Image (tube, rainbow, N blue to C red):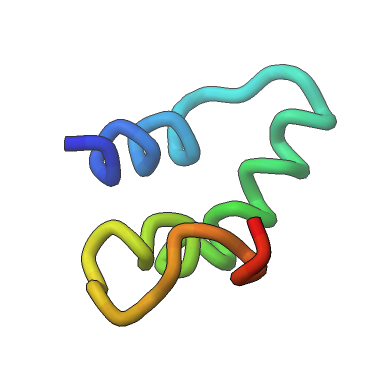
Length: 50
């Protein structure tokens, strides 16, 4: 499942400082990253015009 693979990547061993920073940000907002895939009422885009 995609969510599990994302979680594994975010909690894996990251040696590059920018990657660790990005992973920290993504972990903080992890529930929002794939919310559109599990909730039918949420659009997959960030704007209706896309």
